[in-house]
Image (cartoon, rainbow, N blue to C red):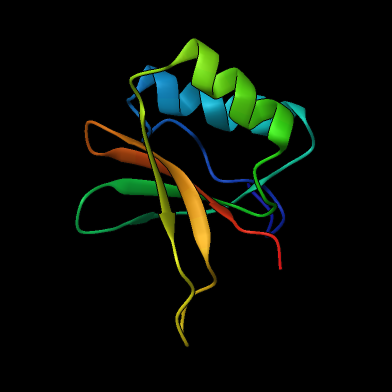
Length: 95
């Protein structure tokens, strides 16, 4: 049985590159807050911002991967992330 603090399963994330980014962020100490559907993708929302080191690694390892940045709104914090084939990972931007 899973407790409230157990992270969500990454099983629904079928993009190998998106899953690699999530796992690399977790290895750095980040955490998946929730996995939720969005109009363009199933999104893994991360707890902490994307580290500069991971951003550089992703750029080198996956140069064709689409990166996005979205401004904050009254309802959502500003965030950035990556999207591929209906799957995405989103990191809050630092305040």
